[in-house]
Length: 129
Image (cartoon, rainbow, N blue to C red):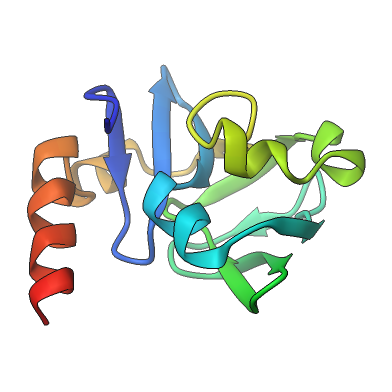
């Protein structure tokens, strides 16, 4: 089930908004498509990022995939626990599997992202595709 409080980017990253802070991660759909995650390259704290920019990579037993930021701003925190336990992204993608916290440059960008119900529709259209 997709948490209703999240917003989603078309590249399957999610955002949980808390004031001007956005916690980001990859969706359950993305982690499932990747398979068992074995390595994660995290962004650097203090990095300035723009929406759609690469902020890391995730390696799984199947493939390597790019992680894109769904919002612009400054990386203020990263989930260092994922370095030793990247598989948490598989088991809890919307909770302990978060990747980074970004201090938003433009709060309005969040409104351009899909709601949970819009993302469900997007996934359904991708499966038909």
